[in-house]
Length: 423
Image 1: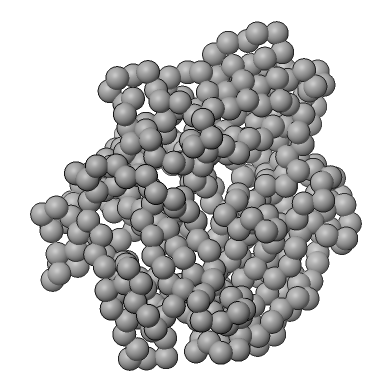
Image 2: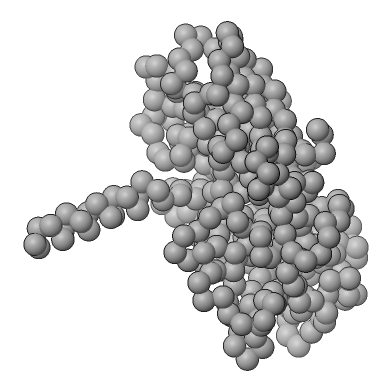
């Protein structure tokens, strides 16, 4: 009996590991804030590079220690599940894989003092040699074990021709609430191509942990692989994201209920948010969960923007806690990860869910997601909080992974960036 119980425990633990999501976007130092990575000049786009192109990513962060630190960065090529692979740095890096961050500036007129660090990648000292998933690691004291933060990015080697569109699903039960991705991939330029080594991943609005993956095409027509299954690349449409304008910390914008200046940093009370499921869908331009760091009071957003403590409130229909569900705050503010840092807590006295964040001046978009505690279902994320509509404008990126025979790494051989409004 004891032996059986032990075996059962190991099986449960093993199952837990096999379904665990790896999260490469993490901050390990509590003094580090507003960590951003995006293509240079396109702050809302996913961090995607094309192999051997002249494009660069811009990486930036603020350090509340407010004194110069010796920060370094390195990159690591990982597999399509963000797990370590057995490769030497020299196999996937041109140049040096241990580089000092030398560009920084000091905050000037903000109440919160900080050093702002910023650099571009690839550069003359370091660039990727292979396509695939990469993790950027920033650390201190020239010691890779002293991590400050990590961020994911993608490198694409465009070997395929990719045609992708967003459609309403044919299933009458979800045709008005969900969106389906239809793909056609031309693999004629992939050397010695093998169907069983290809994997396609689709990501909605940079919600990496809720991506959809498929590896078996619906049809094969010569060199064309078609993916048109009604159940696989399916996403809830959701609603246009809610917004918060924090460009000014002295003037109340539309969504700000109050500004309190009782301490060094301002406290922003956001107007309570309610369920939008009973409100007719209304199309408007949003940031799809992204954020823009900017202000209306000075010229240099990077070093003159201040920080504020921001309190968000979500009110359930009966002002009672949802005992069988968790309420999550979703968007770039929480790295689109539904973990304890994104979970809202119920305030019994007020009868509302609340969450506090320390945010830099800017423009933010966000949504509320409900997940069942016992049987979380990605397809029902917005049903009770935001409403879900097939007309909603969403952004999708499509990544085509291929593990060539005899290699250790997963290449990214195709990429597409599409919006529902393009169709």
